[in-house]
View 1 (cartoon, one colour):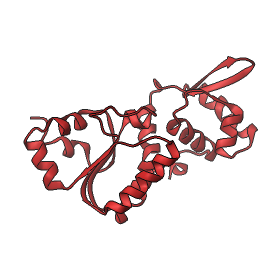
View 2 (cartoon, helix red, strand yellow):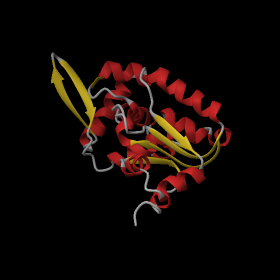
View 3 (tube, rainbow, N blue to C red):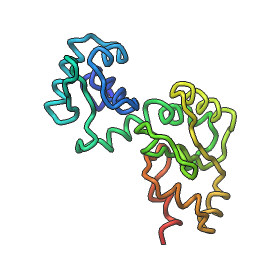
View 4 (cartoon, rainbow, N blue to C red):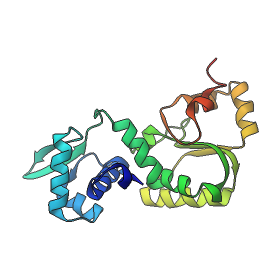
Length: 195
C-alpha cells in the first residue's frame, strides 16, 4: 500500500524500519540486513532522505549511524501510515473482518515510538463487538516480536458510551493520550468527551 504513495520500494522499507523500530540509531549494514535490499540502493535512499531532512546521520567509532528525525514535517503522518500497514496496527487493519465489528481502534503514539505503558496507560484500545481469541492471537504475536508486554483494552460500544458519559477517569486518560487511529474517526470518538 505504501508503494503506491512512494516511488521507491527501498524507501518504503526504510521508513517502515525506522518508524517501527525502537532503536534510535541504525548502522547502514543493520538497515541493509533488516530491509533485505542491496547496500548501494539503501545508501542511495538514505542520502536522499538525509537531503530532504527525513533522517540525520552521525559518525561514531568509524561507523555512520542514521536516525529518523522526529521533527521532520511529515513525521506524524508517516507514523500513521506505517502504523496502519505494519506491525500490530497493520494486522488489526488487515484482519478487521476476522476481529468482529470494530467501531474504533487506536494505538498510542508512545507505543509506536517504542515506549512502554505506565500503569494507567493503554497501548491499544478497541471498541466494538470482538472475537477475543483473534485479538489475543494478534497481540500475542506482537508481544513475542517486541519481547515486551502490550497493555491493551477492549470493550463493546455500550460500555464505552456508558464510561464516557460517566466521565470514567481511566477512559478519559486513555482518550486524551496522543494516538493514531487505525479504525474509526477520532473526532467522532471524542465527541462525547469534550463538552
